[in-house]
Amino acid sequence: MPGLTIGDTIPNLEVESTNGKINLHHFCTDSWTILFSHPGDFTPVCTTELGEMAKYCSEFYQRGVKLLGLSCDNLESHNEWIKDIEAYTPDAKVNYPIISDPNREIIKQLNMVDPDEKDSTGNLPSRALHIVGPDKKIKLSFLYPSTTGRNMDEVLRVIESLQKTSKFKVATPANWKPGKKVVISPDVTNEQAKEMFPQGFVTKDLPSKKEYLRFVKV
Ligand code: BEZ
Image (cartoon, rainbow, N blue to C red):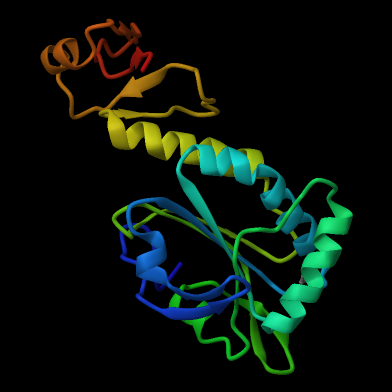
């Protein structure tokens, strides 16, 4: 996707949210942040997504991750909509801030615009989701159309992967789940791996005899 993407520092914007004014750099410093946008208030898929995010928020907070939603409607509308979200998803409390962007300027700067979704005042946000690291850089982005709701288990899974791979020189293989073995990064030699992973690692014997698929539990 053109514009803001993996590796970029998020812009230092001052935004209005349901929890007051937020400076994005201040908000994102020294913690992980999930910044997620929604096409609009009082829409069905968005209502389910914000409720699920609220249900998962303790899982995210336990991992040092803050949530920051965005929908382009105004704050009055957001506050009315939160009542619906909480009514639809029992036990969900929308305590995380939701940014308002009635002029559609923030979504442009955050690369969250959906070219196919428009209302009378301009483009709507896509279902974009940026995971921002403690260094304020984007570590991962999802970009879904308005018709496809996101899976919060997947959001939690990728957070676990990002946090694990930021601590160790490892990567998480296909369909990895927390608790399962990870693979050692290809730029780590076997000698280095023995020092880095004293618990030991298992090298898969492959036809090429190249020892690049090495599993370890960290
Ligand atoms: C929704 O959230 O349900 C939605 C929003 C915009 C277009 C289609 C669906």
